[in-house]
Length: 316
Image (cartoon, rainbow, N blue to C red):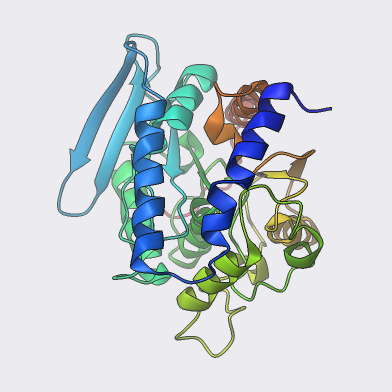
């Protein structure tokens, strides 16, 4: 049984956000509305005074450090990739989640600002994510000191970045986590139909339209360059996936988990009953959001507490 607060939240977004997305096309007015929703979220969740934000803006990497003043050890980091369909979002819109990860997991968080659509394609976002990872290595972090994670498109970007890390033979991160990952640009998962009327936030028309936009230059929308649900997961570090049971993107999460498990990856697929898309982002509005963050940070702490692997890939 979900909380009364979560039921109320689901009802609100079902009658506000979802009808807007049911238009099913990327009109300028829709893009402006989604943009301002993100900006409103940044205002709705003010960060506590004990959280320190340090912007990074150099020629290769942009983003921000989030830490808890005077409390966080400097030798471990969560590398966070925000969501927003590869169209929207920023480190600012996701601070309600990133500062909580920093606090509850006792780690620094580096939240990346990457280039997005419609001007840039997904491979460009991956390039930025790889540059950010290399920059962390140059700061003295080792692969075993880094856990990479993200939500929605940022969850898909996390998986695509892991592919590229392996391809470039960079040091492998300690682990990875994805929150409601957007991972299949073919939009053929059964949940697109089965959960069409159950998902309180997303309308399948909007998801399919965005996926079609990202796949427009590919003959096959299942190409692993843009759809990590169809990637190879051999030699992938431990992976946690958190998702709501009624999401239209549920099949994306399940497909990734199945592929990774088949490749021998240690996978935790955490399905939450009747929770909306990336519900942990809304910690503070309903108890399940805070519990979801605790689940993420418990995974982070467990992974960092494990002994390092004996095999270390070539450094950047």
